Length: 235
Image 1 (cartoon, rainbow, N blue to C red):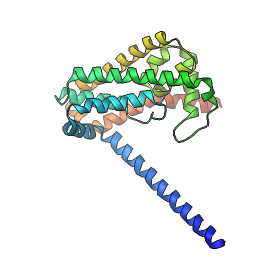
Image 2 (cartoon, one colour; image 1 turned 90 degrees about the vertical axis):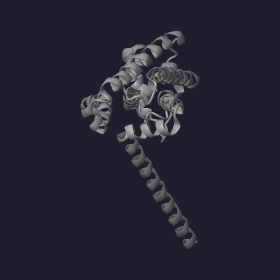
Image 3 (cartoon, one colour; image 1 turned 30 degrees about the vertical axis):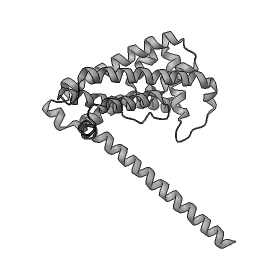
Image 4 (tube, rainbow, N blue to C red; image 1 turned 45 degrees about the vertical axis):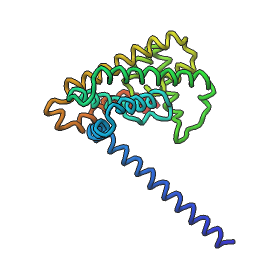
């Protein structure tokens, strides 16, 4: 009996170590993707040609449309894509239109998922694929700013993913939601793609693009970090 227990315990420990190693590998791969986004995206353009628009559409759609995918690159991806378009690797018009379509359709799907599940999601527990804290933070943000949250949140990672979901839970009128949804998508995509288009190929930016990407990610995350800091101070 003791032998069987020890064998089972050993297998569980081995499985736990393997899962931990696989998880660390995923984190390292994601960090590499984030820090060398320009190189990875350039490879995608070379290897897949026009299909790169579909790949970018899928990434932006998932990042804005699925509450389980807030970790995907958003702001930095748009900036780098704009830089590659300026270099002639992609068509700027097709890029902007496909990204706006992805952002609008992703938010729309997220909205209807929120409508379907309703307020009961506030009783869901944290899991690997769901952050209850992020949901509550976004709900508080929504309560404070109303419909403008859909526009403002476009520039706030994580909150951007949960905002349409919360709007659906709160049963915001669909026509009103789409007004903010489309306005926010156009502002978000145009501002970052145009910034990448005009600044991404400047010698200093091109030579230090990894640093620029990290700055973009840091600036994007700054409001969330300040909010967390204020929450800790008030607590």
